[in-house]
Length: 123
Length: 456
Image: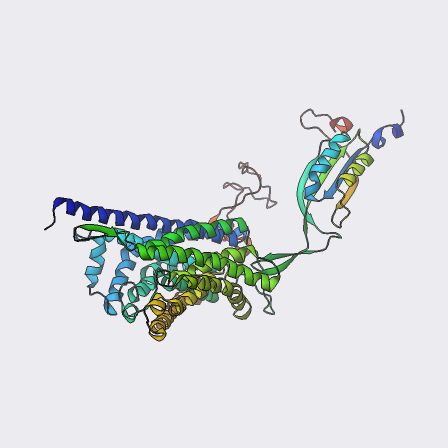
């Protein structure tokens, strides 16, 4: 079996997505459906194409240009990273500015803390 | 000569009235929970514990000072300005060791004390986020021991403003107007929080950390306010010639009604003007408006025709956004919790509007001028005394550089820097001290990782 036959060319991939907080539930469901349920979620704030919003305190406006987002990190070996990217991009989509972005990174190594397994087996 | 049954009736009446006084006293005490939540919600997360500590110590230190000193000072000031005669020792001994016949002396003192502490605790909201604890607590001692008791001596104690006919039913000016003016004065002298104003003088908005707490505090205050106002009508039953009759319930009903109408109208007034100015109904202004409506009605709740309550409440709420903007943009004073618009200007406004809606004017033919003059003089005297006394105390602390915390502490937040606590610790349990520092300083410490940020 050549490397090109196994998912991710035999490597481990990290898919990192920044999405709308209210889309997290849909993204979790979509990832479970493609067999990649393991993930890490962080509350983050950031800015991109979404315009700054006005907030108000005691009748006075101030500008908020960092928007609340959720960062989802998903490390895969046996599931193609492309499937994960597609699942997230599909589930997090609204069509409005501020939907977020999805990035894919190579992972150099992995260790499962409980068992000590390394490499693809750890994922 | 009373028969035994009649004597018992007199005791029953006395007992019922005392229980009523104590009940409303406890309601007024509960307003401190309201102030604590209201102020905690309007400060940033890094200053919450500092604000709560000030609220707790205002009561704890203030009430002892009011017992040992303040109550007697008000009797002495009253006597000196034309009220009931007393001697200095008499004023103190009537509290320290009241005569056996004066069974209500200590209940009456507590009833007065909860009003005094309400006045004292208002100030902390104006100076939040930068006042040094020692300066603030010294002011608490002086407001509980001297500044507020002098105002009470002039008025409720029977002094010259009382003789003049100054009308303040439950403290719209004596408690709230005074507290609001004291807060504004203190905030002016201490100066704004860092970054509150840009170098060119324009204002930066510094949002508080919890609208939820602010609204909870508002409603707790409104609940306690029923004790403040309705409770001041303090005698449900009367006893005379062997018969028990209802006491002052004619005007208890009036107080209950106009307090409610004023509170509701205040919220509408503030929310309406905020919507007119910004196009949005601002939650915090609606909440502040509830309180401004209550403040506005407090001085006059026992003696105005009820439509007046709607007008006074509406105006007290409507002036909030206007006065707050004036204080912030024109005076450039950083009144963190809008203490002056809510307590100060609303209290002054309500007290001055008394002659317009007074029952004596509408039903008994009293002249407008005879009702208005004492109000103007009373408001003026209380405002000037409060301003001068407060300016002297905080000005003195500023002169010796003790009025506010260091800029490093202010930036870090008063919770950690001044109290060593973290109101909202974000990550799990504290680490055990293994002698290995994880903060990059490389210095093993025997005192654990958590530092108080105290400057050595």
